Image (cartoon, rainbow, N blue to C red; front, side, top):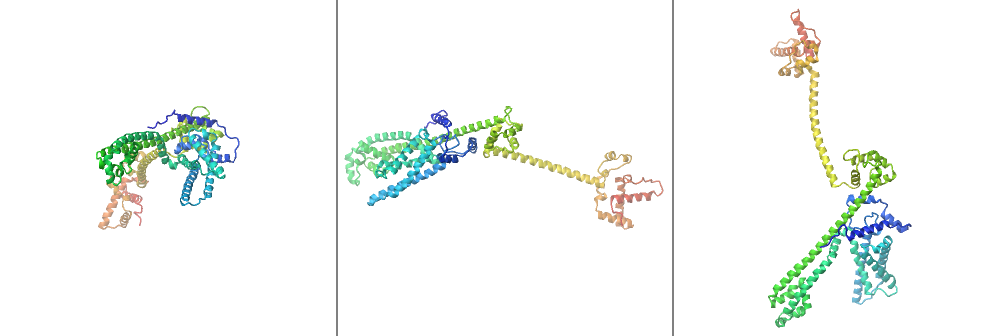
Length: 593
């Protein structure tokens, strides 16, 4: 099991110490062209801008917790530590590895064919790579200075890089031009060891994250694998003593088999303990163990089959499975360790963001009440120092009223510290799933409220339409038709003395305005012409019945007519004239020719 560093581990203590040293380190007073390049690459970004972006957008960094040479908590990253620079350097190292292989193959081919080998082309290629690596080393020394050798996280890699590049420079630029270099095997090996720098660069690139986890897990497992190999060696040694005694010293049984088997010699495999150990290691790796060894032994000693099966189960299936399990466990532990480091780094960045926002809040809170009002926010924006910091966190300073309303969740008219900080962080990054869920719930609630509002509006419109139809009917046919006697008398006190009978439903349906106007006009015309046919008499009777009903529906006094005296002379003619006039008013055009 791999021990995971806790919050107070040695690694965290070293990282904190590095951060303090970097904070105390003075900035260089002079700014050369190289310093200008450094500033251009780093950019003039405020720390809070980079920290909020990393915390909210969830940028997954695959570097070490404190980068390759310094702390990642400091947002400005040196040019030599950027992924672009490391990617380019990795490509150069890979190309150099290919050229080394081609050069080695060319030399071997020249030796095999006894041809003269031309070293000038390969020397020029090596010189180009040597200059590139020397320039890279000088850049790292310029940016990191003594910390290049004192950083506890990358000290071993940096020292190895320095030695390899230095030896290559001495060999390529000094020894070879004088004809005394390039042949030493040590120099050739150091040139090849340069390819090992790829392993360090791979962990800085997100593209090779899985590869680095596998390599890191393997490196973490070396100690455990060493103990497993020791156990396997002791097990093979103990079994080798048995096989040497039982097989290697049994010449009487295996000497005749030598002639019949076609030359299989048991002494080649089991004559001594070390030979037996090597043979058992071959069986443990399952390298032709059946055809070359076990089958011949079992042909002479069948009982040894059980021994070899037990040996294979313990060594190959048992110990080898343990080795694989250890590698997998350490790989997972390395992945968890990186995740814990990333979480710790994000937590530190989050605390720094909160401290910056807390400082802005305190500067804006002039009265010291612990809350911000819209007036305090607008007044704070007028101050240059607060304006610049709010601008860095993308606070919309041009429209503070709208943003204040968005941040004021409880609509109290004041912003607390929690509302201000949380709202600023949310505004900086993209919408989170939680925010989208809240918005979706709000939209669904508004949709339901809108559906209920539509239903109520439909009911209201139906009532309005009904009321409109009633008003139109009243205005067209007289309100006394639809009102009872009491209501009509209350509205018209002049008719309280008269008796008004309300029409029944069937009678109301037979009123002239509910009939066809053309038919009514024809009936009225036949009446005025004095037609006496049965059909006309029937129509005349219907029309007179309607006129009689009008006496009940529309009182003559309501139409401005004089009273009718039944006992007076000419009363019948006067009543008929009044009736005709009422009919003409009730049914327009009925008495026209």
